[in-house]
Structure formats: C-alpha cells, structure tokens
Length: 366
Ligand SMILES: [Zn+2]
Ligand SMILES: [Zn+2]
Image 1: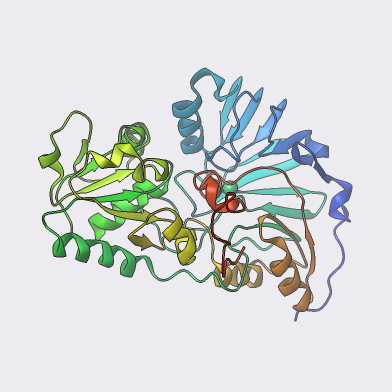
Image 2: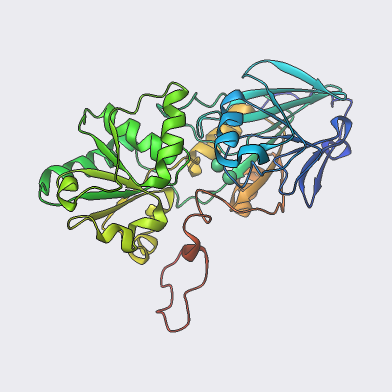
C-alpha cells in the first residue's frame, strides 16, 4: 500500500464528472463520454453501437474510430468529426483529454481526462490479451478508473485464444466434407478471428457473409492484414466444402446457414463459457474468444492502474465493486443505460428469461 497522498484540487470527482441519463457528463469541458443520446459534444471511446451513437453535433475520437463511424453511419456519423490520435492531448473547456489504447477493437481508446490535478480514466470496453488487429491496452495510473464489467464475475475466465483457434482448425481438418460457419459480431470479433486463424498458419480463402464485408474492407484499408477473403454470395454449395465461412451470430442459426453444405456451427464469443448459451444457439463448436476483459483481467487492471476510486459500469457491477472494496478501493456501480453490442446486442435471447413453455434455465449463471 502506498502512503495516502494529498487529494487533487478537483475532488470529489463527482464535482466535475456527472452520471446523467445520457451518459457521463464532464462539466468543465461541457462534453459527454459515449452519450446514449445525441449530444452537442461527444468523446467516443470506440465504434460499437452502444458507445458510438449517430448524430452527435461534434465528435472527438481516434482516427480509426471515426473511420468506423463513417463506414457505419455515413453522414449521421456526426456534424464535426475531430480526430485525436493516441497520445496527443487536446483541451476541451478546462479539461485536458487524450486517448490511450484499450485493446478492444481497432481504434478503441480509453479517455484520459485531467482537470485541476485530478485524472479520471474512462476505459470504454477493454481486454488485456494480445489482439493482432488493434493496439494493446495501456494501464494509466489515475485517481478514478471507470471500468467496464461485462464479464465481471469470477466464473468468467477466458482460455487462451490460441487453443480455441486450434480447436476450430482441428475440426476443419477432421471434417473435410463439411463447411464451418463461425458466428462473430461484425466490428472487431470477425476480423480478430480471421487474423488469429491466419496467425495459426491457415492460408486458404475465408468466406464472408455479406454483412461482414464492409468492415473487413475497412480494416484492410486501415492496414490490418486478413489474407484472402471471398464474399459468400452467389456461390454454389460445393464452393464451401472444407472451408471456413464467417457470419454474424444472427445468421448462423437461420436459413442463411442452410445453404452451406452440412455446416459445423461455431460461435466466437466470451459468452460461450456458458454451455447453456451455446446449446440454446445450436452451437456445436463454442469458441471462447472475447474482446472484453475476463474476471482476472479486470482484477489485474484495477491493481495496475492503482486508482483509489473505481467506478464500475456496463455489466456485472456488484462482484467487481465487492472485490475492489475488499482491496481498500472506494468503489461504486454506475447505473448507465445502454446495451452491449458484442454481448446482449448480438445474442438477445440469451439475456432474457426463457420463453413460455421452454425448460427453466437450469444452472444459468446470470
Ligand atoms: Zn465494445
Ligand atoms: Zn460496450
């Protein structure tokens, strides 16, 4: 434990950063971080729809996040888009703002904000494992750390990605007469899974559902190598035999996948640790690959940033608040509205109680 230091001039932090229905509001800079409703000024941590909403008047984000927002929203990406590369600082009102990599998806950033000697870091979403498609998370010492907690329960421990990819490639080898369809959300997970497959030495073409084409193209334009990708549209069934097809999670279980020859249904998601969820989705080959920190990564990160105060949002707040409190950290849960694009947003049925007539969710963790 370090000796108590003098409190910053701007303390308590609630005196300048407020939790409002639209999101976190930074008063001396008059801006929101990841507002859920259009705001006059928005600082955006990354391109997922629960963080980057359309139609803000002014947007500050990393150049890659702005490119992603333009690709997804077109004109509605925002009125004035101001790029801020990692490590550079701008002053907004009386607040110094800079972005530091969050290791979540391409362009993802933690927003580091300083005002009168007080430094608050809003993590956005993050993970701590290596990801060939984005810059790694950098811990920043701070007075208040605002952390996500999507997988904020000790039961969530994600295995190494390499083993999950090896299981996929092993299955491809084992069933050369079948196709493999891998469900992955369109921004980040799809490109990461492809890059990991390439890292493992697989160099055959990988087929893409139409929904995955625009962001894969953008990633390549922004310098991420994904190898040979082929649109899956308009091809005969035979073309997919022995191949990997990437598709959105919603497509793997519906009619679209039925056009594939005897598909092995795989899904790449942190939620695949919960067997019941995999079964509900008809997933034969669950791959635990997450773009969010697991429990150990969350706890490690709290240690590394060393903040005496932690605000927890975006998921399972209570367990992490309890853990932090036990370590002498002042911790609170933020009740921010929103949905998680990578989690609930793409696997909606998994977050809701079972439909009438369905078997009770025995052993469900959540
Ligand atoms: Zn995200
Ligand atoms: Zn999120």
